Image 1 (cartoon, helix red, strand yellow):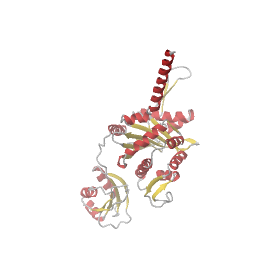
Image 2 (cartoon, one colour):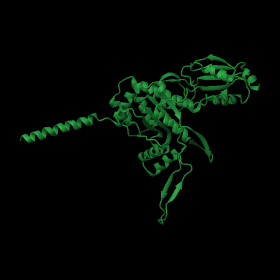
Image 3 (cartoon, helix red, strand yellow):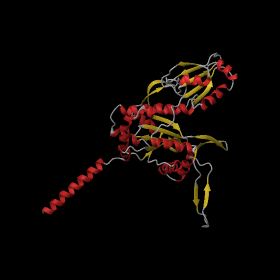
Image 4 (cartoon, helix red, strand yellow):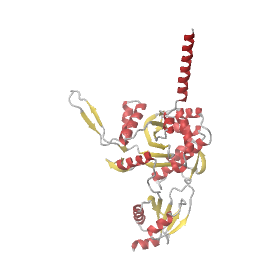
Length: 392
């Protein structure tokens, strides 16, 4: 009788210990955050839930717990990946034959797998191909469609974002505003001609910061986190993971958020455009993320406007400034061609930037013309004095 009681007591103790371990067991994301290991997420966005074959955006998200840096690397769906060999046995049972595709893109890979497999397998195949292509481990993935994204933003009560784009047919609202899910989608998708992708990425960066501030404004609600996950089309993240990430977001600062495109160039084949990744530059980018280092010098973003009327002079100046390590993100015309003196306008308030460009050009008057949330650091308006200097 005593032995039975001892056995029962031991069994109950073991059950309590095991249940305690299960309850206190950390999620995969929590374990990585605890060990301060880098985390990679793959974020796929789709057009509509009814049409999952419409792949919109591919984002590779990297978070460094040690340095609190969040980096989003945009990867175009039309990115060419390395040649793929698909071995099939001939009906005769003879040697295997390799089928090689020269136009194998991420978008085509996803679409082809969707025709043969289900939606889940198609997304996982795309993830595996990216891991192999980029030589990276991407343990977590999240897939959203337009409908799910809109619901998530509305569940969070909208996003407080400053829309700096003047009134247009695409964005008929601007200024500091709490954007609904539908407006948030339009805000992120809008691509102004003046700045192209650079402007779009700046919007993403601003939106992510608004999202982090929204999460920081109140303590994370487990029920809300579970509801957010329900609106994703596919993910391997759990509510515990989202709670851990929401808690970690309190440590991220606006300066620690970066959005950039994977290094490469546009190439054309049979009247179609593709993105060809620069593998060496991409490897260097991910190595820097892994080390948590910011090896690059502070980037100065410049806009050049032709205010003197001389054709091609803005492009020539852009080449000269790029040789000096400056990032020229926009080239265009000023409001008129009557500028007598070259103006070098400091937009972001960074000290010494306008003066540095003035010294490179050996011309121009540095002035402060600071704009809140400016997309460029310096705007150069070329005047007739620079044209004379250029001709000499």
